[in-house]
Image 1 (cartoon, rainbow, N blue to C red):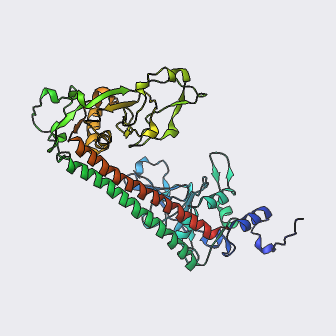
Image 2: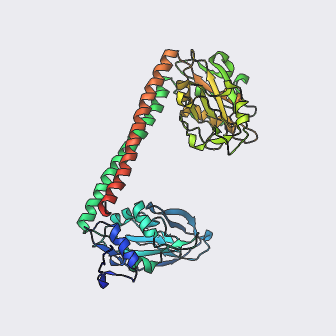
Image 3: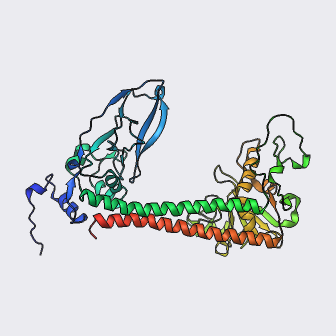
Length: 452
């Protein structure tokens, strides 16, 4: 049998018993629940008339607690509105017509004196009651955003919380200032650790590039090409008629530097993928260039194809362990290569991908993939892409065979591939731990302010 609960009238900020219980049931009872209006004050906002000859930093705010930012820097003569608000430091900032998903931010030193349109609004934070970092941290929490989105009204494209509603109806947990600082410090420690681990991973990636260049004697890769005067080039070094690549940049000081088109014994086969016949009801699928990342495959982006079409394809076209799959087209995707492991055998791929099957007695496919994905390989892809007279971003089997790469003895290739694989394993581990620390930072924060 349900019990009768008494509520003190003074505890109801509005006559809304449902929201009262939602607040009481949601947050940690150890901390007082206070209205936003108890620590937010009406701001004093200066306005500026736009001068056509001056530059202005236009501020925006991102969802999910990512905060305020400089959306763009523009000259005054490009702005239609002629009066803007000047952003004051230590103020909460949001868009009056779009406040869903935690789209609130704090104006810090870097953003102060930026300008905002009349669609945006501010509130001064009383720092004797609320830490600006604590307030911003609230909006990074999906649980806080879900709670606040319960107050959102409006149409699909204009979902918002009214400014007066924010100040006079919505309560959040506000511990004493010292406790807020402790919670923020605990969160920041985890985030800083994650940032440190991410930086270590980035440094290791740079180490791989430097290791590869040094180990293969590629000292000319950063050499600048003079564009002044007449330069002679051997006909055999011309990759595309009308475009001149200085191939000396790509020559190794230690080993023979070869292209597949001049060294057919280095590979067995090279295919362009198939143009598929799609079928939404099928359970057979095909890879596309979105699936092929930097040496890994993401199957979530596959598309399903007609089963009869799928079974008609010769089995030699399907991926095998040790193949190299390369994106042939797409701005930003062209040139990504993946070494196929056993997990991704027997897959078919569309016509925007190439499959290279190397002679493993002469070329270690993993070694080739690392070289191809490096700055050395990608610069050649860029050169070939730029050489297209039609300006199509297309690699293709013919151009793939023109890519140069050093070919040391197979034992050295194996050692290089093994060393880089170990470094990549460390990188993946660091990034996994960094991701976990970011997640734990948020989980720990939510455990502080919510009922368990």
